[in-house]
Image 1 (cartoon, rainbow, N blue to C red):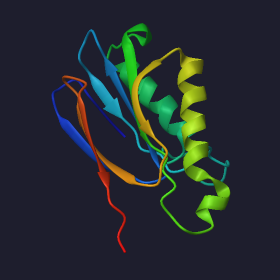
Image 2 (image 1 turned 90 degrees about the horizontal axis):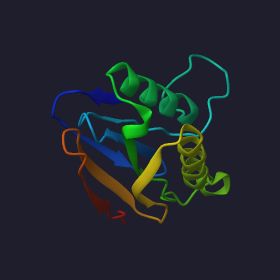
Image 3 (image 1 turned 45 degrees about the vertical axis):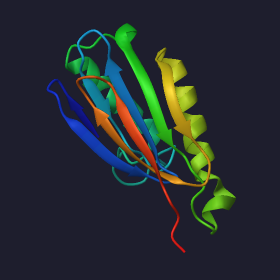
Image 4 (image 1 turned 90 degrees about the vertical axis):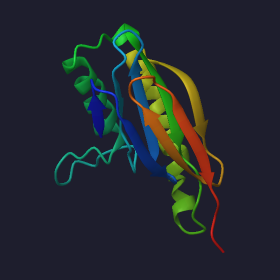
Length: 142
């Protein structure tokens, strides 16, 4: 997870994981998370690798920088079914997608762009100053 008041470009690779990119359209501050599973099960440390921790922390960190929730918009990527294994039986990508939809709605944050699901991974580049995101699909090997 990364948030910044200063211009920067942040890159991440996504398969079944989901990245939520938040951008304050007034202050031009941005932040991104990248989570693997929708919910932390309560074992061990609460980690932002779980959506319920990652989204809350991302929003809180944006607020700590001075952002107002009413000015924050979201762009969301990932949630693919990329593995031909038992991962598909758990529908992790689909569960990650559903979780962020519900969570952002609960916070009143509008998603203005997304590329979700499918069978290909994605690489995204998020510009925290402009809110622009470049995305390309990652072709499967073999």
